[in-house]
Length: 430
Image 1 (cartoon, one colour):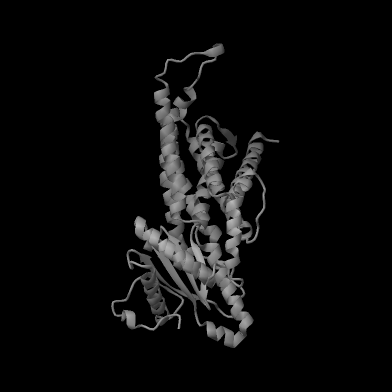
Image 2 (cartoon, helix red, strand yellow):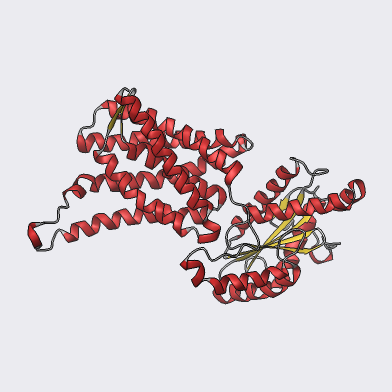
């Protein structure tokens, strides 16, 4: 078999292995934490940079490096997946961490070279390979910082046009950013190693191909394999589960206060957790945001389709809240068709975006099979920006929920209308 064809097949295998392992770690984040995924991402970064500096293979359309094509492209897609399923505050951690970590490596190597070294057994440390990739590592990491921000901004911007076209949205975001990255990275390769134009052409074609391949895998993962919250699953799988058994036991006790229809925490839990969260926010100065969410025209769903359909609508809302809130957020069924989401250490703008994401998630899920269209309205308020106490926070978010209802429902209101008569307004819970 032709060597170029063998190389192409091996690249596909490498991409599948990389994505399979990283997607598995990402899927396990709710059980083991996101740190496992991030550490694996960081470890692979060093190998990726080294291969991009010294390891190249021929393909039918040019010369490419598996480090740049598979590992770098895969990492960028993983960062986008992290943003899609978590949030911006989470995805910035590996982006900044990789940047600082590489600067630290290069800085420490410069200092280590000042030592007077011994050679036990005739073996001397050889740091020459770091000379080959030191500048490339800094330049590549700087590009990663730019690429990571750019792919997220492109994904958000394309969402206005391609919200229901997940694959195309991811592919265009990744393809454009990887094309830009290839231009920037080749400049460094040409300057440092006099890389020929075949490396640029081969890398560009390969990265576009990688963008297509990884985008398809991410789309399938999001559709079929993304983790949904499981409840009541307490097992001792390894030593870390054993060490954290007490925490799991306490979590199991808390499940006794979960609303059985929606799977969310119930009102009693909010009345216990809410005051503690508000006190902590006032003490530390950290923002605390509250979303009050209400099912639109819920009575008409019961009247037209019966109470089982109403229960189905509430279950849909509960499932989408559980699946789309961020790690650390808490969702409650407050009563009837009303829900609360408590977001600790979350600024008002981020909470408003979360509320809009929840609204769209419920509407999309409802259109796929519920009896009648289920939509929600939401009001958002943040402490200390809009209130000083938990009661004031609830009242403000409640007032904005009523405004969302008054303006036609199926929307999020994050600010008070100057024309709205505040305390004289009827409660949205009525």
